[in-house]
Length: 346
Image 1 (cartoon, one colour):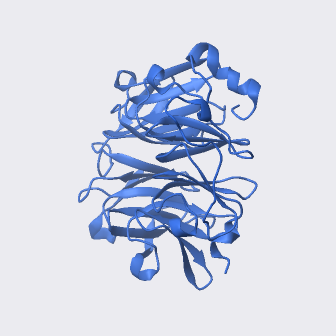
Image 2 (cartoon, rainbow, N blue to C red; image 1 turned 180 degrees about the vertical axis):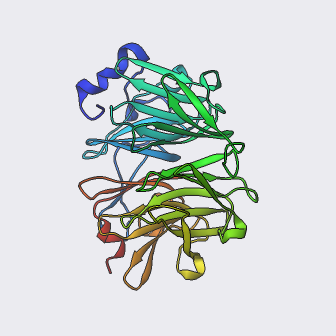
């Protein structure tokens, strides 16, 4: 869809999107290929632009990246960068989430609504279409195919061309939905980012379960979820230098159960956990707000920072490709890791 020339032309007619090679952009972007000069670990490269990146999605050999400056497409083999979306003409605000669904429709969450790009058309959904808020924070396509949207004023599920809202009146711990996930039994997890009243809401078999500070959460601001390969759920929490990760056991029915927490005192790079990822070796990566990433090893954790080659110490999102490569969206660029084993190699 994005990776080949003919597919890039898919955007031009109806969405009025100019495919702009970054090196030629009048804004003076400096380079279009990953750089790894000074890296202390092999196989790590940096891609800029884009700079601030908080959303990533994979489409074949193309990586889509979204953030403060709109949506970019990066060729995963050459690192060539294009800016295929005219954010101003489409009315995009700051991009907070990207989702390529099963029909290869691209959904863009931003602070002016939810934009759908498909075929030769694009449409932005707003509160006029049933969204609880135009400030869209996160996206999830559930196993049953339904699209869920998290906003600053509640969650919503798409029904035809409209949305049905779920708020704190229906069972959410708070209306500010910052992260979402689905467990292996179809339970829906909603994370709020409003301390001290925030926390986690889980809807399983039509029953709500809520977890707050009093229930052993390290912090009431929820940043991210990770459904691990063993079916357990990891949750990132925190603000600035406070927070941590919390680990849930998820039985087939009934309430999830907290089985542990992790913090900087346990070996994490920092207390606020900004992003979570499980690599092809089964290891969990805990990205901090300020201090790099802690990657599980047999003996604890290995800390990787900008000093080892990352583009920035704050990683906001991590995705892995089927070829084993790992891509990290950070506060200043994209970090590419050729092989996850390099981050724990001695």
